[in-house]
Length: 395
Ligand code: FDA
Image 1 (cartoon, rainbow, N blue to C red):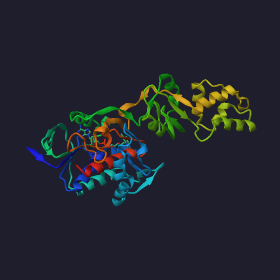
Image 2 (tube, helix red, strand yellow):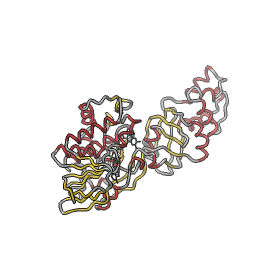
Image 3 (cartoon, rainbow, N blue to C red):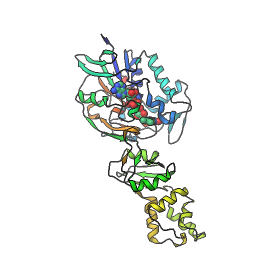
């Protein structure tokens, strides 16, 4: 037996929950489907369990897309302040951690509960543990075949996310539906993801696992981020690395300034005025963890003279390895640990005013499945809320 509803939303993640609630508020009968046993699984684990749900400074410049203008309309129509107002309405306490990033004081579960309450109040039926077996076009809408039966709908919203973290339910279904209906899908790759290193570097730097230092990381195209760099037993991570990874292509170098605030050469020369006998190693240990100084000396085969006797050549070498440390990662940790998927449904095939497919009436794509990817810091959820809200006004 086929059930009839106005709207089917595939994917009860951030974008799907928002869209379903909004469409329900317009009086549409909405079915929100997910193959998982819980809604909003990525929300729950995000931000270390506290969900960095938006960023106070979110703007189009914080997003990557083949068409950087596409995200403007959604972000302007449903802003971070609109989402913050919803969080306030539900009495959820939050704080700014850094750089405009807003986190729940207590738990990310509060954000999922809030969205489920909005869905419930709007009469949305959330149907979990439901496999999507196929989608067909009908004269006046779509037929969605599932493991729990068939649903006919006039609007179909695809909100099933990207490929990152398959263990949390990520599948390529959204891209497959796009292709089935003739939309172009741009190549995908892991974003906001740690780098792996070449064996020689990995061996030396693995000793630094857990060490974090300030840095300014720059990609080949010049995009840079001043954030922490974290050494891990697999390679490089931390916010600076995650951010720059979205701008990285295999084979390219990433440059790290390990003292973005201050010239270390000037500082060493200053120190040499009062303590010329101090060794380079001991001097640098005043600025960096000792283990890092040891590893740096080993990795770059630096001598260890008294700082009163630094040659011009050594100064230049120090400048290079400390302020312009170039790394060619061997790769990334891939979708297993990536926070997001770059690429996806080509925005050329979508209306930025409604998120609807231009060539198929009633078909919408929202959230991460679309070729719009935010920086680290709450920007990806804001895109999910904004694009989900927008489609919810039309689906
Ligand atoms: P999302 O992935 O949330 O939802 C897709 C839904 O579709 C899932 O529920 C999935 O089960 C379902 N689905 C997939 N395939 C299906 C199929 N075949 N059949 C049925 N259902 C299917 N962003 C941010 O702004 N702040 C943060 O703090 C974090 N933190 C963070 C931590 C970690 C570990 C990760 C992996 C990611 C983040 N992110 C983040 C990114 C953020 O989670 C992501 O951008 C949004 O969840 C995307 O929302 P969507 O609704 O598009 O997809």
